Length: 309
Image 1 (tube, rainbow, N blue to C red):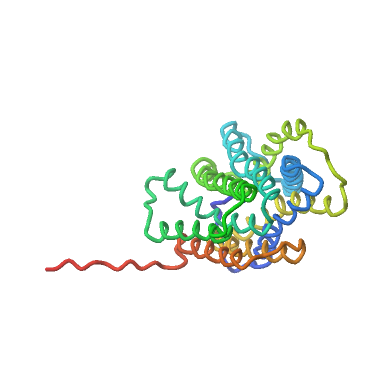
Image 2 (cartoon, rainbow, N blue to C red):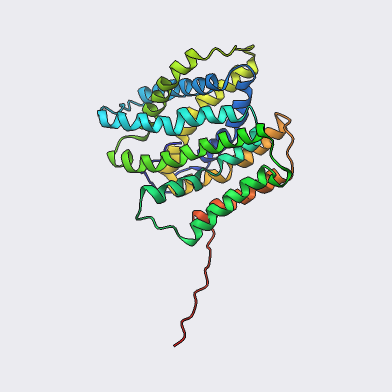
C-alpha cells in the first residue's frame, strides 16, 4: 500500500472502505494460493501487477487524475515499484509454495516493524525509543512462535518463511523511501499508485515472458482468484485506503494492520481448509502486540532511577 500525506476530518464515513481494505488485503494470501494452482510465482506476481495497473489507470482516467510528468518522479516510482511491488509480490508468491496462506498473512503483519527499523537508518533524527525497540523484539519473537521454532523448522518451510520476511523487508525500506523522495512532491495519491503499479508491470513483464513454467488449467477458481488479487488487492483496496486516510487520517488507516492477519487466518482455515495450529494465532497476537508497542498504541513505562541528593 502507498502511504499518503493527505489528512482530513473524521466527520465523513470511513468505516466501510476501512473494513473493505482490511478484508481484501487479508484475503490476498488466499487469492495467491488460488493463482498458484495453475501459475508459477512469477506469473502470479506479474498478473497481479498487470491487473492492478489496468484498474488504477482506468480509475485515473475516469476521475481525470493526470499521471506524474517529471522524470525524477518516475525514477523514484520505478524504485518504489521494485521495493513495494515487483520483488515482494514475487517473494510472497514463492513463499506460499512452501508455507500456508495463514503463515504468510501473519508474517505480513510485521511490515510496520520493518518500516520502523528502516526509518532509524533513513532518518537519523528518529531516535529509537524504548517502546519501539521493545515492539520490534516482541514482534520478531512472535514470528518464532508462529513457525513453532521449538519443534524445529524444515528446510522447505524455512525457505518460505525467509521469502515472506524478505518481502516484508522490502516494504520496510520502501515506505521510508516514499516518505523521503515522493511524499514532498505533492502528487495526487492515485496518480502515484497508478504510476507505481504500471512500473511494476513493466519490470515483471520480461521475467514472465521468459518463465517457461507450464500453465495449468485456468479454472474459474484460478481466474477469479487472480482477478480479485489484481483488481481488488492491488487496485480498489489502494483507493479505499486513500479514502480512509483522507477522511479519518493516516493514523486510523494504519490500524488496518491489526485486522489483515485475522482475516488471513479465518479465510485460510475456512475456505482453503489449511490446518491452523494453536501457535499460529498465538504468534499472530504476539506480532500485533509488538506492532502496537512500536507504534506507541500501548505505552511502555520505563521506571526512572532516582538520583540520591
